[in-house]
Length: 236
Image (cartoon, rainbow, N blue to C red; front, side):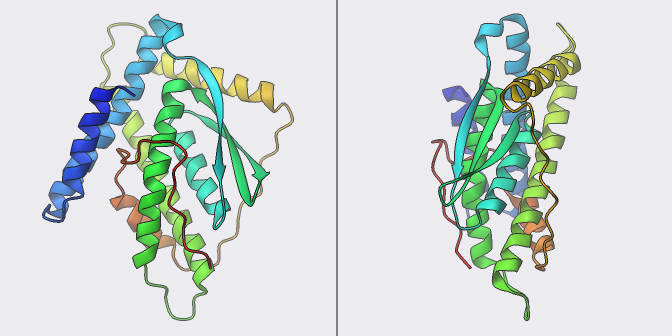
């Protein structure tokens, strides 16, 4: 992502995170930062349609350590899917390794957002109130599931809005993005020809709605800009 774009996003999010900022102002700043990142993704896709060497299909791995490794992996997978990347979860160390596939610009966006959202999730969980009778670990897992699902849906909407707003002066934006998704899928199939879909999880905790509410408030512009950093979530 360009330095100029990062500078704009950082300034918007700094304003949104200012304690003197009203909720309405914070939402407006956050929405603009999200719009910029989504627009950047479409711009890079259109540029690569004209000059493929500017943005190549690739892959990278991201370590997702304990605690709550499966829940954090779900957050990363949701972000990746919303930004037209694909992921494969593997066991690794004391947690998981996610093997991500996508175009370079989209993989970069995924890592920037994941780093920031892990920090935001940790902060949100630290102040979340566990209902009486609810097991803390079960509550945190359901909270994270609600947070991840809401964040992914917000990102999908932002991506769709950016694609709709893009000028149609060259190739069709929809066709360009569909072709990119197809190429990522083929790259994934080449690496994992016999991939299996994981069984759906059963979550028993009562934190789903609190996590979803935190997801609706989350900054989606990405404040952490160095890949590989994360704030660990509190263990059970």
